[in-house]
Image (cartoon, rainbow, N blue to C red):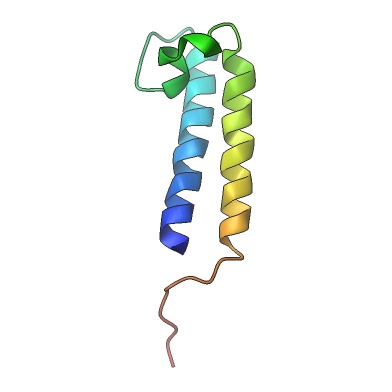
Length: 73
């Protein structure tokens, strides 16, 4: 479970940081989610920052979830 939550956190962080860099450098349409949702047009910077915050929050929350990692004895 912890791995899934960490992966989700990483996904949000990549979408947020990458999308923000893409927008600020006038990059074209790419695989960043914000570029393809019409409701987000005009709010790209805000939505990308929200993605970064959500990804960070999920990442911090995943540290509290019991993981399946094996401990060495």
